Image (cartoon, rainbow, N blue to C red; front, side, top):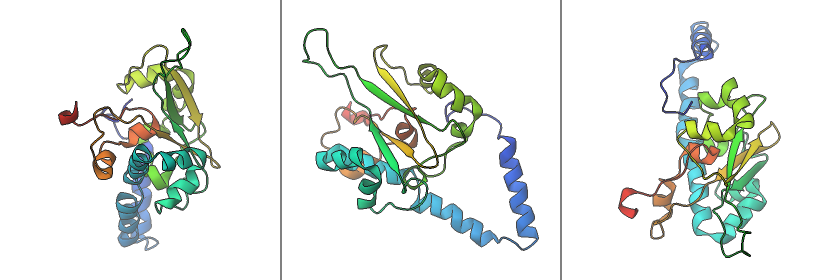
Length: 215
């Protein structure tokens, strides 16, 4: 089910292409408009925005706190506003095991996973357009019923005592995951850290990995 799987394109993709061709042929839509929309989502709206948000939160504890308190306001600080996440964005942080608690009371790790069980609500402004698998009925149902199995299929095997929290997006609230910062990345710049952050990690179906030189 992961993005690395090579599955045939769903019928809806072919249908959209056919409708687009028909609208252009009838003069109701121009290729320039289509190109402008595509470029917007490639250059102005996309996971590179979310990666900048995560990198800032990793290096700036005050910003991280603001992000977890009011995600919408915090991403606006970096210039990310508008529909598809700018209205109400809630950010949940993945956390490691916290030791040094009373014996037998260590705080377990938390891993967050985002889904939209009704359709494909998604924070476009920071993650871009949702991947095809995010919109599939299989992911939408199984993410809630068996999230640990879904994560394994994406290559994420978590310790048995890690708590998995599933967040169901809606038209009113969009969710984003603040992934764990990889170990050994203390000396990296914001830009270098942002390069480690993937779209899938901000949905919760992947983990951020340190560059090979830092491992």
